[in-house]
Image 1 (cartoon, rainbow over the protein chains, first blue to last red):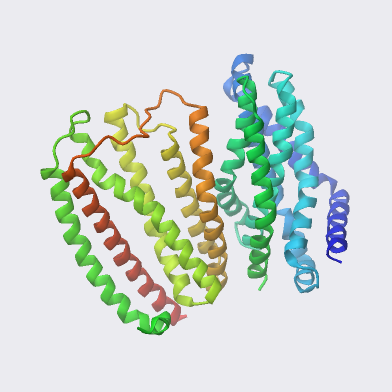
Image 2: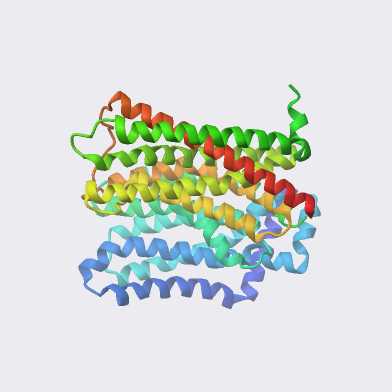
Length: 223
Length: 232
């Protein structure tokens, strides 16, 4: 029953995202645009670009995820679906986890797929592509999971977008450090496995505990 | 001792006044003695000269900034678990003081860094995590300020404080690891040099003064919050 509920929520959110394709595209486009602005601001020497590439990609991914977080519960809150989900028989943390998974599929996975393109623009060395993709693959779900707490807390508040950034970005620091750090280590010729494992550990811990916090926050926000 | 007797805002109100007044006096006395020890009794540092004396403000402020966040999260969790109004008020009352100490720690650190390291700011692990702590305080206060309804504000803030307190060690260690990876020209001060006994005395006195100050200010703020809630 629980799995069926989760599957239904994921399928529903994916279908909704498919119907509103421009929303999804905007966040991905934002990622590309932000990353493209840096060379214009600091100059296009390949040496300099190479040294900031990983950081730029990761920070852009953080900001892009942040932009798409508002969509996570807002629509359901506005049309009353959220209340039904709160009243329903399926445990709320499971529903939250399913919604977060759908959010990652729509907002996080495209970033992982498009990141190599930006890495190409920044002239990142070819052997680093794999580590970069892996670090994003492990890191972006954490961004969605932790971001969901912030999205639930700021649900329906005035100025929610800026507030959400203030709440969530400090909590993103470990993901940024581990994710970018893994690639930097690989770039320095060291084994990035330790950092990637730490990132995976962050993902597991966040995936287990954060849905409970998000569920509690949702209940508070929709009282 | 009937603890729960004082869990009600009405009965706590006069007690908060008494505790606040006593703490304020204590804070003033301790700060006077502590500053005297720090500025006149403690010897001049061999390497840093007189500039080091700012640690009598800086170190206690940094301690308090971290400690108050934990205490705040504890009150917030109590308020969430037992649904006691006073606990949530305590969390709300502590946040500005914690943010203030975090800011003071950063400011005095910069003032000390300029003559000693020759720069206002380095991306040292401690400085960076203190800065992120300041952001966490701001997030907590901004969230509570954005919600008009008191109960929802308190409960939402409680969740954020708990999530923050779980994250602080992770943030701290990740920043520390990041710092070792990107070790630039910054000064490493992982091992504290041995301190003269009077220096330590001054620092402990100032820490106690800051404790008393925090309690006094939190009590004053709790009284305001109780009054505000009553008038609503």
